[in-house]
Amino acid sequence: MFSKSSKDTFLEQTKAAREERALEKKREVSAVYNADVIALQETWLWPHDIAYLGTLDHNFAYTGKSAMDTSVGVIKGRPYGGVALLWRKDAFQSVSVISCQRLQAVVGPLCGDYRG
Image (cartoon, rainbow, N blue to C red):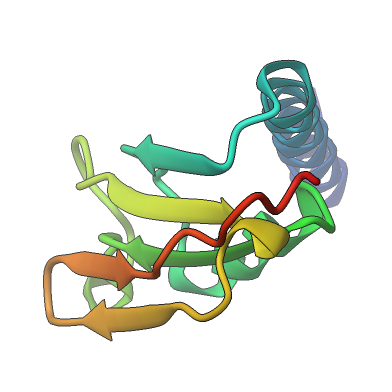
């Protein structure tokens, strides 16, 4: 049987490994498809995890909206998902993020022949 501290350590290590595999998969998707815009849904990222989007590829800017309600304490059942948008920095001269309570939109004009 695990002691409480070793069980907690095991769970933390398992969570960290799972998150790293998910990040690696997203990096591969970004590199393989050479996308200008990546839209993710059902991210299940906590509000404090949105910044992980910035680690996927340094060529991309990002925004995300967590749907996880941190005020309820322990999450029971299946939580809401959340959304994220990543865009290639050199494809958009300026981007405006429009936030509201449940949805998020990104507006930005596509540059000319930015891949020159």
